[in-house]
Amino acid sequence: MNFRKKISYTNNGFQIAPLLDVVFLILIWFISASIYAKWETKISVKVPTAKTGKYSKRMPGEVILNITKNGKIYMNSVQVSEPRLKKLLNELTKIFPYQPVVIRADKETPYEYTINVLDTCKEAGISIISFATVHKE
Image (cartoon, rainbow, N blue to C red; front, side):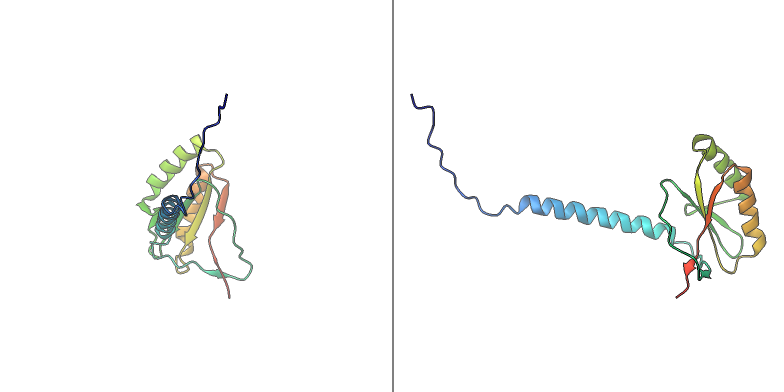
């Protein structure tokens, strides 16, 4: 008995459809990643320069607090008042006790506004706080 059937293999050539699927998925990923990167810098905050500043890796779930030169506070690109910021940070530290926070204060921001935000973070129980700077070239 011959159980083998005669199967003829034909060369279908180069399949471009799977390649296009992968290219479009990568394109969509890069477009969405660039949109999220722009949201952080949408607020006109010019951070000060530092000679010893170094790039640190972003921590997952970190909160970015922007302080403008007129004292307005933006939490992840949304303007909040100090009492609202304190309430949000308190709720956040109940869920995530080691919540990291990055403070991006404008270089022309009065020292008082930065210290008020720092006090608010400390009152909420946040201990992982870093300040954003630009490396001096």
